[in-house]
Image (cartoon, rainbow, N blue to C red):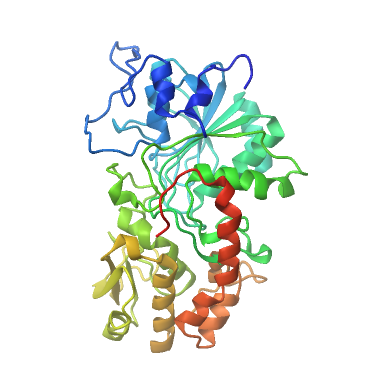
Length: 450
């Protein structure tokens, strides 16, 4: 903390008093700060005063204290449409109208700040019509580009506020990590406005290995990391970042904590509104299955893009009723499989009728999403001779997308050779246990593992 920073901001950060920090500023815990906007109306007002709503994201904690932890800072904000308050307005609009935050720039990840772009796309750099702020295209930016944008904008503090979904191949966490590296380069501070992990706090799946790192898995974490972005940032800062920055790390990851969240609570239990983190993540149920069914991006089956239930509807023109029957008989915990038919409007098999399954959530607390995906892959490979792994000719050294998603060739090799589900999942038991042990010092939130 420097002399120019608010003396109360640490009370709102990791290990601090949380909502007690609001009380120190003369605010009742959970009450809004009625900072006037240019129009003379309150800058922050909860959508409802619902005592049953017990989970309070970090952004709302910060807003309730009128953004005091950002006082005197030159702020750059990495966010997207999920960076909202309970009143459903974006933090950028609220910060800007409050007059309490000196925003130097906004940095949009995949899909963009306002969310106008599809998968694998971004919004080009532009001036935001509502706020007049420059919004920089940060999707795919490397460390040097991020550092250059921070310097151009004149940023000394980077704020990250995006709803993650808990999967290694969801790109927002790697945008965050690259921004952390750039913050080391530029000397900027790093603040995370934390949000719940919508699939809970348990880690699942295989570890990423160095030969297969990419934009969908840049560093060695497991497939479903089981951390909030604040916890993950703390882990990355100590365990990974120094190896990428010549031994340096950020002096502190400042995390404005979620209040009232436990590790065994999935998103449906938070009472929070769901804003689609990306166009193909329409519901909390999608997030629950995505770390597993997202692996179908690495096959010639449709993962449901181009339907209203992506990653829940999976299929292909060659799939028939046998897949649903096989899966229904497996007794996979937490889910049920329904025979389904659909016609994608874009992406794989456009305009073709696909047979397949819809994955239905029966018990969110019982789901191991990676097991769900492996069960589906093993059954599809064994039943259908037309099943194939996606082959990318543009990367001849690493042509199989499934290897980038799962972190090595192991899963593909085992399923191709006819291994059963328990053999595939058992292969990563030790590395998962090691990762789970390594992350413990960086966890913030309590509650039993599922």
